[in-house]
Length: 288
Image 1 (spheres, rainbow, N blue to C red):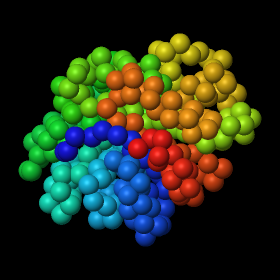
Image 2: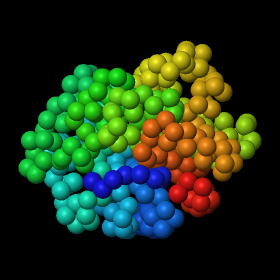
Image 3: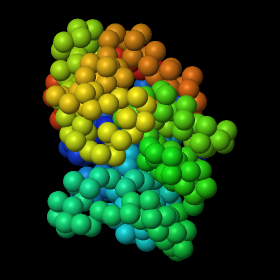
Image 4: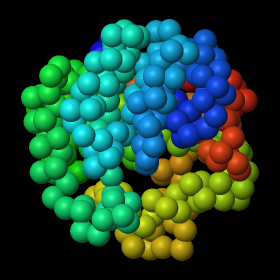
């Protein structure tokens, strides 16, 4: 993997939207100066989506944020990474995560168990694969202390999602000076607090019911009142930056000041299925 710096874009549209539109948007994002494209994984052919973005870009890293380890055999992951690298150069960064019990247990009750041990086993299998998926080509979706510790010894770094700059500082301390710290930051380009927070709450609705995230927020001083009833203004404002270009740039800079090497932005809008290309364009001069 080449060194990852600058600002990236985290986008479900690039993963699950029309593939031709995603390729066109990816090419423009690279031209605008964004250094990486991050895509989620909640089912479907992840590697085809990654290859689509790699083929559409030059010099841009394509990363999984995250590859759901319950949905992909490690041998397949290593093999597809090697094939993508051979075709497109060393631009595919594999972010790996343990996902969430409500999603994994939906089709097989009780399957989600011992997530830290599952991650260790998955990394062992990536090391043993032929060819292996090297440590420098993978990062972990690490929130809590144990997963952050595992990332320090078994991955290039971490890709924390739905975190504050305070968490970024903890991730930097846990990983050490050489680790890649690449948090995601959700943004709403809207200066009206009522409409901006409404957009943020639509985005946060699912996450407020996921223990992995809620437990992490509690580590940073949030409580039951903050996660109730759609989330308190305090929690919403901490997780989703809103305002004008300067306000959004300031939040991204706060992550950098806390130790982030790279920040990937997730632009939120009233239509979560639409490519927010105008906002990406507007923010590029202040973020790239």
